[in-house]
Length: 166
Length: 78
Image (cartoon, rainbow over all chains, first blue to last red; front, side, top):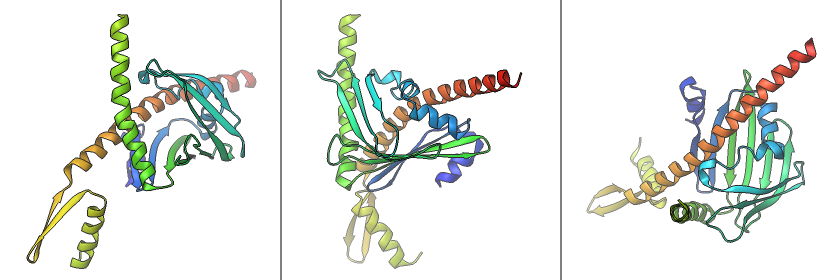
């Protein structure tokens, strides 16, 4: 079903999110550029910073250390008006295959997912598949519930803060 | 689909909380587990919005890099 979706021209630039199983989530998107360019935008920290945090999220990336090679580590710190302390995300690159595949761990908790992103080029376009595999079904459910409950609250706090300042 | 096949399908949906079933005599009635489905759909939609925004930004950057690469190749060929 998924391949059908991404191969139809009308849906080419659509971002698709699917829960593949009890423990897996995938996000797919096709980009109109060869894989080496998309890989570069993902693996060069200066470029990565320019797109990873959507402006609408109200967060900023305050530090971004990425040692992109198999066995290397990363550490990202975000700030948000609603957080007292920066939020950090860190882990290890299990596999880095230039222009093809990056696999990393998420070590903020022992229930963190293993994330695999693949870059598949055909006809000068690149299909990016972002795949998260959680250790247990409960860990994925918690990630779903956490973001579902957390975000509206954060946005409400942000709204308040903005209202105070305006 | 065979009745056995159907039973298997329903029991998987039931385990996932997507449907609820009730058996009265020989008849088993299925209902959609509406709340669970709506919650999951809402979460998927929020996640899609985040990734859409993120990938839209990546798309712009990739277009920019592609143009730069073409311009570079053009300069080098001169």
